[in-house]
Length: 219
Image 1 (cartoon, rainbow, N blue to C red):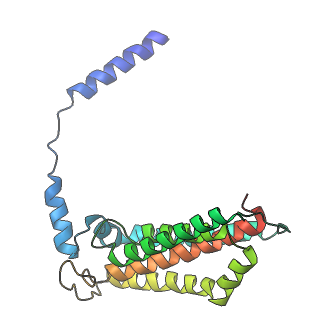
Image 2: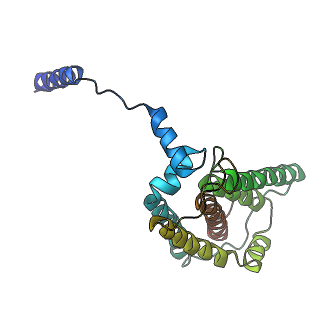
């Protein structure tokens, strides 16, 4: 039986070697088309928030369902009575400094993600990282108090709804002014969708961090 597998593998190899090579479509032309049609220099963002916006809308919805699922599955467990965290001053200073840098990166990627490498998802990850760095050196009660005080859960839901409405408007052909190429307000809906994604991912990450700290701890 082993020799049969060997013959089959050899025939498959010969078949692959004899398949004619299909000339590749020049990638430069595709990129130029994306940049021209979207009116922004970042072709990756143009694909995510224009050419495959259907996928992006459902990605945001899936992320929302993941946060809700984590909260639901852990809600029946008993919260931890004590949560350990870093208390030494060097760790606190480094974590807070890192959180400041991540926050600035989050703002930069959210506002300029359509002009340079970045975008809403990357900005949201940077924002979630900033929150995580603050969480490992802060009292969980304080972090949850801030979360409730500023109604972060409500703003997260609002950002999801507004993103879906804006995305549906773009898919139905409702266009905003394209603006001047290379400026912050170029690309029509794209910069606003970037900001909404960044807000949703960052606030969702905050909710996830609080949930796992409450029931699983940090260390």
